[in-house]
Image (cartoon, rainbow, N blue to C red; front, side, top):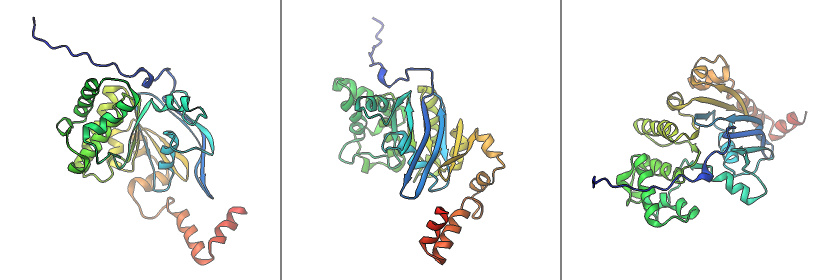
Length: 293
């Protein structure tokens, strides 16, 4: 006997794989409004497999709303979101569930349950969506936590670990079912610069090693240039830039230049300033009257 121990690991869930060579994510003429506020305006784009896509833009530009539409947390007013060609907003629950098995989500707050250990948090989606024995689930959980550098925190509770560790534990849970796509909602929020670098490296490493498509919502400029294969910048519910990080850096668009430099004055806040001024001087009816005209 050689003394080698052979461990039979479960295969990645086939229903989480991308089934075709088409786009991982397709957004088609998406529209979303809240009362008079048109947040997403006739938006169309595609994301290929195996890349890191960053969606950026100023506060209120539609980033979070777009994310909610893409993960099926909110219905659009018009248009479609297709995950591997499957309508995430389908009227059929079976079809919606098929689309949702394709992706994981790292929420801004990490969304860990304080009453469960780190290991139990990561195990939760596996227990709910598979019939695997507990011994296999335990092994999968250990592997996912090792992937994100959290192998030593299995038995700790969320309130016992730092913000950066919570992010990594949340990421382990997001990849627990071997998804083809991972959405990241402001993954660097509340972290120090060193931990932001750690999370950025994890995003890049997991994308390349696991072959997943990563969609990152962020306004952290150093991160954008470290991790992005392609960048989308939103403003007033529309895509105002799409291209490489280098193209973003060299853009002559005044909106892009203002956002990159952090200038307090420019086209980004001009519409807001005019609206606020008219409301202070004349009242809300001024804005309503101008929009009706």
